[in-house]
Structures are given as structure tokens and as C-alpha cells.
Length: 66
Image (tube, rainbow, N blue to C red; front, side, top):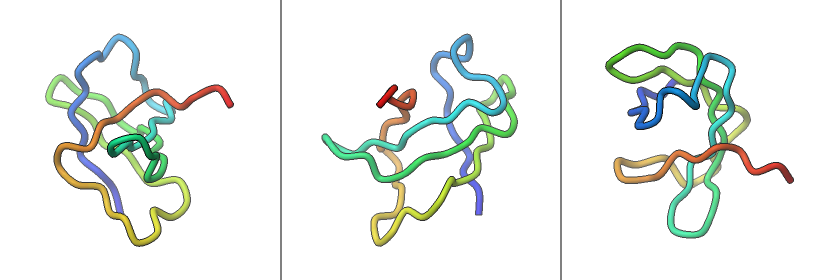
């Protein structure tokens, strides 16, 4: 699978950037950006998201350093 993502700050996101999908205070999973365009981007999941699936309204954040 893959995700079509909205990139609000394109200056911070390039191909191979790892983003985390956050809902409330938890991290659901990680995505690796494969393509960035003016319209947004395409990303592939890294590992499994388990039972929680990403939904519209979830936030994408830069991967924490820990």
C-alpha cells in the first residue's frame, strides 16, 4: 500500500524523509516519502500500522530523534 499525503511545509520534506502518523498523543506508524510534487506526496508504510489505520485528520510529523 501507499499513502497520498498533503505536505504543508515542502521545504522540510524530500524523498526518503521518514514521517510519523500521529493521532492525539500517539504514533500510529511511520511512512517513508517516495515522491514530492506541488500537489503533495506519495509515501509508503514502514512496518505495520496494526489495527489502527491512518485516517483523514491524522497529523504527519517529523520522526522524533529517539
